[in-house]
Length: 143
Image (tube, rainbow, N blue to C red; front, top):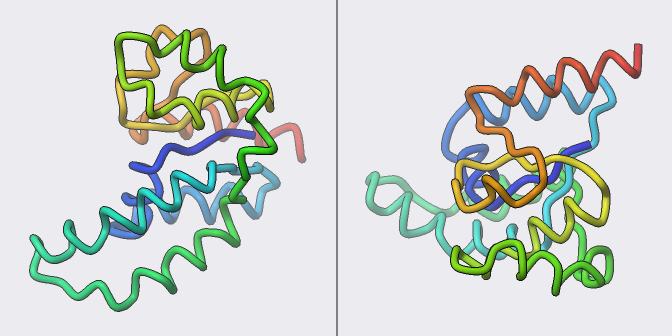
């Protein structure tokens, strides 16, 4: 089980590698979660990113809908009790990222992100170049 930040959702839409990792480990039983606000952020930022790359954003809703089959969106009711603690741990950094940290605290699990604001927050943080170390171990428990 691992919580994804919006930047990972965006990478899953823009490229192949993150999406392949999600697909590979989802079928092996690893559970992926992302706060609904992370999906909202991805939906907000993807059109501009795609436009800068000279690509159309017409497939964004379908791509995000597909991701929801791999990465379960969770509402604030699933992690809201941890808002104050998450904001405290992120104080002086990007406190607006509190839903991702609160979700990880709520589920007692790690975070997958490229955002360094989570480092030192008391929760294990994985980046895309290292996350498979964690996911391989997680998937062994389902064998």
